[in-house]
Amino acid sequence: MRNLQRGQAIVEFAIVLPLFLLLVFAIFFIGMMMVDYLTLSSLARSSARDAAVIRVEDYKKYKYQEIRSKYENNKLPIDIFEWNPKTSKEDFKITYEKNSQNVKVEMKAALNTDGYALAKVVDNLAGSKMKKIKINVTYNMYSENKLE
Image 1 (tube, rainbow, N blue to C red):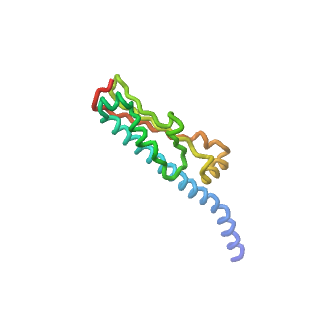
Image 2: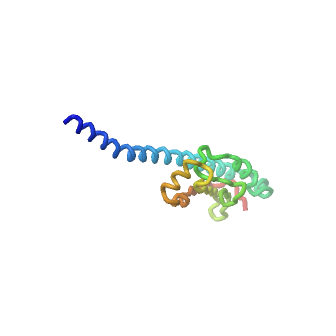
Image 3: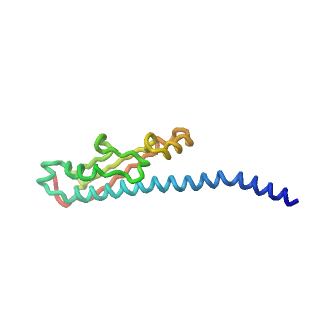
């Protein structure tokens, strides 16, 4: 009778282990995605603050180019998402809205399925639907100076 119970425990373990590992893997992967999201959000907030306090003379001369160059060299720590502000102007935009006198910072990043091994594994498991996962961070801040 004891041998049958031992066999039952091994079968239960074999059924539960893959589900448990999948759950742990999913928690780990989502945590890594959140690190990249929080880093991008922090960069957006910092660049919006710098853009909100820019002097009128500097705005007319550079149009936020100094701020862009200051923050575009930053990298995402885990690199689950691909953020290339130097090659793509859509990944990092700073605009001034005349009507509301707000500075708007937009940052976008797509899932890096080409370069990161863990992202490739998840992409293969999900059936290539992971490419649709993107981060879009928009940060608005009231400008201290009327720029236009």
